[in-house]
Length: 129
Image 1 (tube, rainbow, N blue to C red):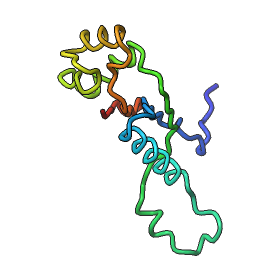
Image 2 (cartoon, rainbow, N blue to C red):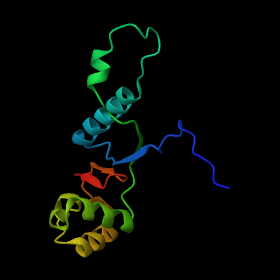
Image 3 (tube, helix red, strand yellow):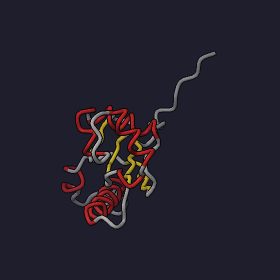
């Protein structure tokens, strides 16, 4: 017998990963910004439902799970990231890389060749370096 799904069932949170390098000022700015956006997205009006919530209503951000890691991506993760940004931008993700296979090889040889910060939205197929 088929059952109906509960109307209050929510889709799982999108997962945003930040490959972070604490020694890089740009990485520190990105982690701060993502944490602020995550906090703002999860805010809800709870006290006075009659008060003006115009500001919150204008900001339509989806809540997400933020995963900050100081590890370099795995080979599979790197392939996916380059699929999202475009293989022609391999050198923006891995220093000196010409293409996908070159990026994977260089990262295996030297983890420091990874150019953090890199932000990845795994659910929506987007990445930024």
